[in-house]
Amino acid sequence: MTSRSVPERTQDEVRAAPGNNRISPLAAAPESAIRYISRLCSEHNGINLAQGYPDFACPLELKAAAASAITADANQYSMTWGSERFRNAIVRKTSHTYPGWTIDPLTEVCVTCGATEAMLATCLALLSAGDEVIVFEPFYEDHLRALDIAGAVPRFVGLRGPGWRFDEKELRTAFGSRPRAIIVNSPHNPTRKVFRPEEVELIAQLCERWDVLVIADELYEHIQYGVDRHRPLATIPGLEDRTVTLNALSKTYSVTGWRVGWTIAPEPLSSAIRKVHDFLTVCAPTPLQEAGIAAMQLPDDYYRDLAEAYRERRDVICEFLRMAGFVLEEPEGAFFLMPETSRVDPKGDDVALARRLVIEYGIAAVPGSAFYSEAGRGRRRLRFAYPKRIETLRLAGSRLQALNAGHPDPLGG
Image (cartoon, rainbow, N blue to C red; front, side, top):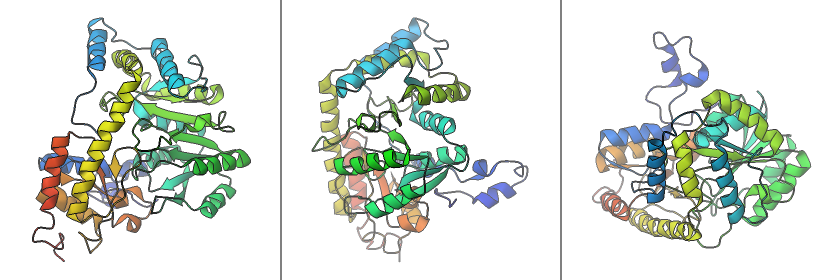
């Protein structure tokens, strides 16, 4: 598979290094582009708009609950698939948010070490080597790594502008190859897209017709703007018995370092995921599951305020990126932008532009090629993340204004 990251060394160079002749092809692959750029940002004391983590505090209720749980010695293994109290809280909150979605906390919820492990456990539990999985492109790179580990084969379907829409004929053709599953991430990382009702309906029809599993990454469910369009795929008629929903505390509650996520799936699928999860990590952090109960009890106003706060951040970063010469569409959801870079980078070298932004301007963004199976498709894009304080975004904006000051071509062409 084509490399999809920004390597310090190529895969062949890594494998040729002394002592590395016995490592697997996966281990020899270049590291995550997001982590690479984030480390480069740290080395240059830059503003990290590459990795999607907040630079502001999580709700006080969560910190108090975590501290209380640790003080009360809730520090040992929990039940492998999550404490009963936390699973019950997840179900109550989910059913409240989406009336009519009936979930059995005893058999249909598995608490994991973040959504990353939730995806990996799902792929290992439900996919076999050689299984084909439909993936919308551009994609979140960790989804591809999970497929790599499971030995599954991605079948890419393009999302293209304006609006990052897919071509119906291309999607139908992909289903015609009889895939095992499809990954749907909405609101979408990295494009900022929220899948439209008619798009979801078509996906549902095709999944029913071809008996395809749905892996639904819905981490950004509460971060969307304008029309409230997101609907969990598991609530779509025909998808109830074939959908695994992935979620986590990370993005909604600003605790990306806690690594607490979960899957919701029908009992046969959930049972398989629980078994794999047990051997991957045993259980998620016990005291942080207790804090998760507090998160699930936050009032509806919290989620409305969250979306409004991210709307403000979106508007600030969009203004600065446009002023700096980037071409973009306003995000519909999540907290990412993937602007077109031709005006600031006529050469179309996303990796060089990303490195120069960090080293010379102190701003980290991810090269667009990290989100494509063929690097050339992302050469004229960068991904920016804006889960930051307004003052952080304004500081980043002031640095972006220097991008073209006296430098019509930032790469010196």
